[in-house]
Amino acid sequence: MINTVFASKIDLWLAFLILGFSLLLILVPVGEWIYNNSSIKRTIFISLFTMPGAILLLLIFFSVKYSLSDDELLVNYGFSTRSISLKDITQITPTNSTLSAPALSLDRIEIIYKGGSIVISPKDKDGFYHAIQERVPTLKNDGNDGLIKN
Image (cartoon, rainbow, N blue to C red):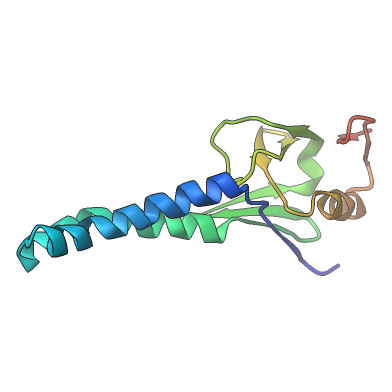
C-alpha cells in the first residue's frame, strides 16, 4: 500500500492569528528602522529576536501533516515528527479539545494508542478514517463517529 499524506484542517481564525502574529514580528524591526530612524545596528539587533519567532511560527503553520504508511502514522509538525505504530492504536474519537496539539483546527480527533494519545485535525477526516481502517481492519466504527479496536 502506498503512503497517504493528509494535510491539517486549518481554522480561518487560527490562520489569521498565526499569520498576523508572524507579520507583526517581521514588521517590528522594519517599523523601528523606518519610523524611529533607528540605526541599522539597532534594527539588526531587534531582528535577531523577532525574525526567528516569525520563521518558527510560519514553519509550524505550513508543515503540519499526517502520513500513513503500511505500519505507522507519522505526525509532522515544525521540527518534530512523532511515529505511532498502527497496531498500537486502540481508539480514535472526535474531540474539540483546546489543548496544545499538532492540529490547526478545533475540529480534531484524538488517537489513543498504547503508551499515550495525540490530537490531530486531518482536513479529510473521512478519508483518514478509511485509510486507517484499510491498514488496521480490527478498528471498527464505534457508533459515535469514531473507531475502536475490537
